[in-house]
Image 1 (cartoon, helix red, strand yellow):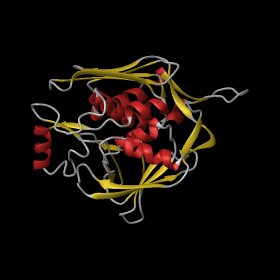
Image 2 (cartoon, rainbow, N blue to C red; image 1 turned 180 degrees about the horizontal axis):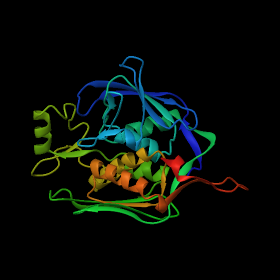
Image 3 (spheres, rainbow, N blue to C red; image 1 turned 30 degrees about the vertical axis):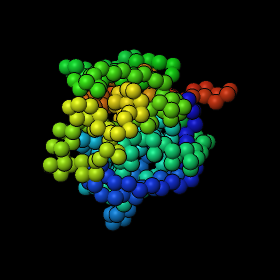
Length: 301
């Protein structure tokens, strides 16, 4: 676990299609100074407006995580945000020439690799964490998102689909760079053929294909290459959760436990989390010979 802020060491660029728009998008990640956070800028718009990737900028969670501000949006940010969070990148500026982050291969793997290739720079400023002191739980019907005190960041995710190729799956992992790169970042988004056809009929998923998603029909997996992991479905849901929770702005030092959650329910949990101020505090970890620095709750939001 890293205790100082980090940014990308050099500029990194990629191109790809937007999952829902079907448009070709150019994306560039640039280094940013300490305390900058993750920000997006739309270079296709006048004055290249910027927006911070924070929970209070979320405007839609129906099909993807979408942030918006002053009349413009940036859509489908969860896989890129998961790559930043999984590699403990605190500060970066992301330039886009359209409104949707490219889907690439449907996972966070391409973003993870381009960041690692560019390098990661440690900055001489302390990283702050949400330290979970008491359990926080949000439950509705069979959905739940909970977080419990833990000395190390950890996440457990469970899903349950009626399809024979998915069924019940659970995956748990420490939130470390090594685990994210090896066991999580390559897991692809998935969908059911009937749902994909419905979305395309109504103008969504224009860029979706077997090249950037695992698609299931009634008989099984349609992708010729099969799965990257035996339980790729739950690993991708966990990846989405990492991206969604990164919108808190600070990493959580606790054990996140999720069951049947999605973007909308994850976002509801972020509100619940921040409302329960007696259950957490924000602290930086001490360097050798120094004391931990904790901030008043009002500065954490």
